[in-house]
Image 1 (spheres, rainbow, N blue to C red):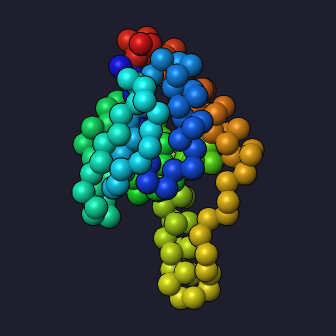
Image 2 (image 1 turned 90 degrees about the horizontal axis):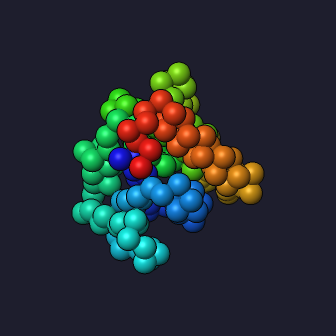
Image 3 (image 1 turned 135 degrees about the horizontal axis):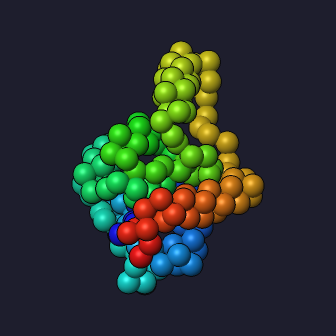
Length: 155
């Protein structure tokens, strides 16, 4: 069954994921290093993992299956999930694909080096309304695409 996994610790779009999942009848698992409030719905689960830097990523990679969907801003996690045939969407709605993940990894590495050298400071820009809208649209499109290609994932 098609499932959505959310790298939840710093995810700013959990409410949007809930909206789409509810409308499409999908289960959602949020994976985090600490407890957080989640809606009291039978289709939403919170998996709290140990407080290690990669524990949430490792848990998601271990449990994700072909054609599941992962929502994350973490590029290395996106890369690992793509290798397991999952579909991955960034928190700004940008899909991670086999075609663009190499560029994303390279850009991440370059920006990390610039930050380490003191050339750049600060984190990513704040999420905009259009990013949330793009995420909603992309999530809908990915779900419909999976359901068309793999009818056994329709429920």
